[in-house]
Length: 255
Image (cartoon, one colour):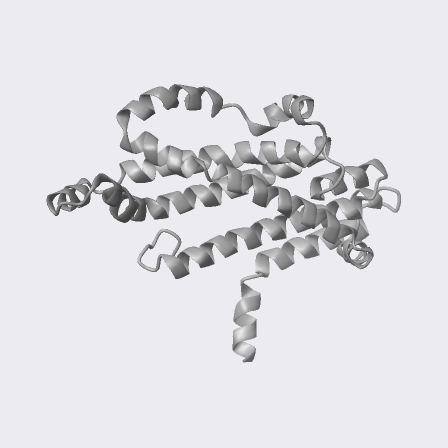
């Protein structure tokens, strides 16, 4: 038992070293007047408890995760679009020029227009997340479908499978690992874009919490917000990985 605990703690060696360095700098390098810019870890823990006890951290987390989920549902339309673009040349020829013009534009560049179009509310934030999620999912879906082994498709056609059956039972299943990779990347980019959008165009959410705390020099609240964003992003990615491992045990893409 003790050996197992020590083995798990050894994986946290770098994290513990960073926390120790942070504590030393805050307590012994910074002066009392500059310590507010980088409060020690124990002060951040106290601030986190204050936000949890008051319910404020939960409220901001709930609003952010709801926006992420709604935007991801809309961005999932990239999967059928990507399949169509990869499978039918005529669709790719029509859609690809538009996609390639829009794709290089960062989601954050859309914030001024999105505020003018939707105002400062959930729709504006969800639109920015949608842009962050959509293109990684689309590109990976196209790559996954185009990367399907041609012999699988030929074999299905030789056995008399219809075009719909080939797409559903052969192409989609073979492309799923690549599509899941696109979802992982898209959700991560969308989560980062959400926080940036909330910094300037929201009245709640983790990004709003960080910006609001900055204005009153509550650096401890800022760090709590940043840590929450990181932990939530990690948990989202772990959930996706776990779902893939259980539903696609034959794939080694996320092994």
